[in-house]
Amino acid sequence: MFRIPPSPGDTIPIPTGETALHIELLAEQAASLGRAGSAIQDALARLRAVPSQSPDRPGLVIAAAGAVHAYLIQQELMGIHTRGNYDAVVQGFGIPREVMAKIGVRA
Image 1 (spheres, rainbow, N blue to C red):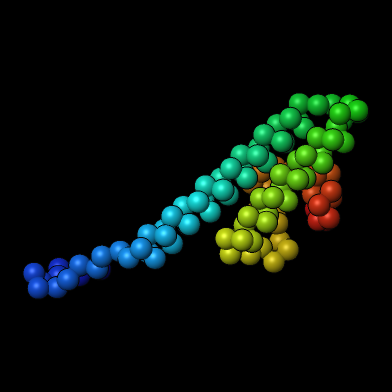
Image 2: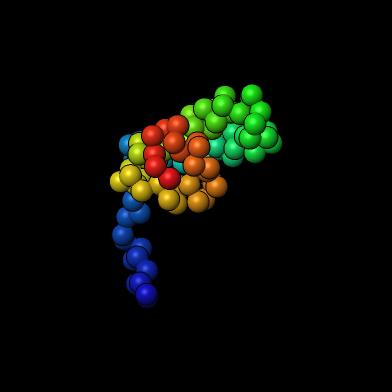
């Protein structure tokens, strides 16, 4: 869409301290969600590297469930409401049922 450029007499809005703080908070939230997503990927990689009958597996499943739970909480804090539908997260990260079951989600 075409916009008329501002005239020389128009003032350019200058960001206030509150605006700068808001931008900084949004950036930190996004970075935190990214770190939480990386934690899921790392936990799932460790889980996939272990055979299903390994005695180490239950602990790795719990660790992966904790990473997924932290990610879901961060999403909620950011206002990304899933309303109990975690399909996009499960499919996006390839989260196994046994991990989702540990946080009480039926997959």
